[in-house]
Image 1 (tube, rainbow, N blue to C red):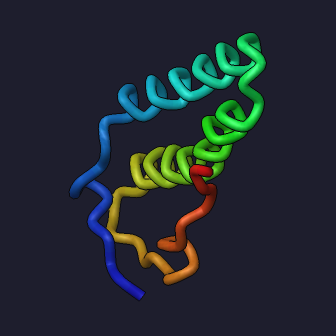
Image 2: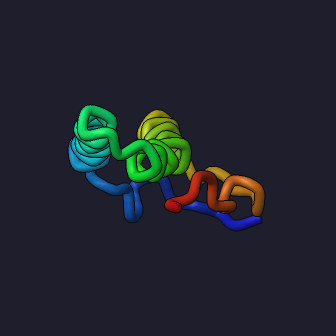
Length: 80
């Protein structure tokens, strides 16, 4: 396990939310164009981004260093 300082290297939350919005808009446009496989690709990125968003928010709530397990460092979601 690694110790993580919650104030260190926290990605910009509004940028992460904007990326989630972009991915959903992209998927919507692709579905409307009949591009189902590319839409699935856009949606496939959401689970990993969701995990990052939740981790960032959790870190913002913590006042002291927290331990991070190897499992939480795993990659979720894939692009096709």
